[in-house]
Image (cartoon, rainbow, N blue to C red; front, side, top):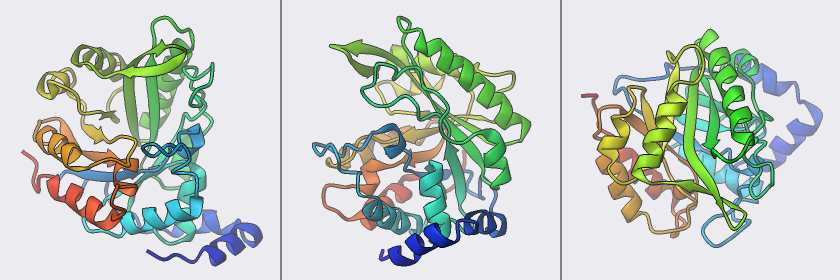
Length: 294
């Protein structure tokens, strides 16, 4: 989808007050529609330095290109909304792409890819107060747990406080949990069945209330057993993108039938398909979601 980058840049430079004005005037919608399902496009990767698309380390580095892909995806039938950091969401506001969309602000982006402090994942993005003031629907946080790294407990504590702050404002807390460890100095997420059950059990208990907590989880082996580890509603995540989609679609199709799974929150996999056809990739993913809740 072609977008008016020139107008966006001019507004950014001359009229930054338009961001708050547009947020206040934006047409909103309920978090869940009649189907009880959610399909969210994720675009918070750049703020953590996670720009890789397949074999291209800077594949997500062109912001103009990313915005065109996001606007294309958000315009497709069945797409409910977007999850991103303030810079991206404000661009989308200025482009008029967030009308009647679910909007989730990404909160902890301080755990930069490859950094020695990656697991001390500070809240350098949205806070609950701003999410509520902007009229957004919730906040997302990444929770990576390495029992050998003290940074993990600081992240757990910060996420617990964020869950509380969002719940106090009746906003979704989207929690993305992993058990993690370092291999040759590089952080790896453990995607085994057992590790995901542990990660979900720990993250489900963050904060003084789980009333507004949702989970963002990968599709791993034995998903029925994994998803039975919590009653919290869950959304399935994607991957780095740039690869074949058929296998991902098949995994999502099966997992979407599990009782706690409410939909998808996918970014690079759909925004950067190997054949370049964002619309087709998004449409196929949208078609996987059951039309009615069970």
